[in-house]
Image 1: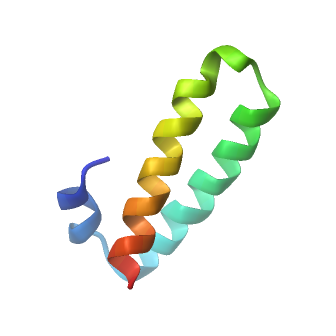
Image 2: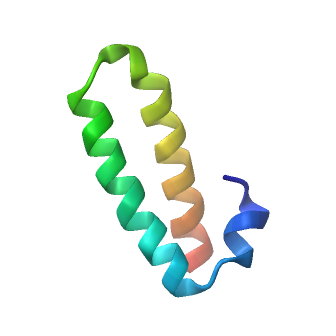
Length: 54
């Protein structure tokens, strides 16, 4: 998810997406170590959303 896409979202949508991503990162950490790249990408998206919410 790019920063442009995040900016187009409403604040409520960003909060909803943030909750979804946090749940997804927990699931990926419990899964295989092979998916560690996915967890890293999710963390980056979470950081973008939190930055935009400031």
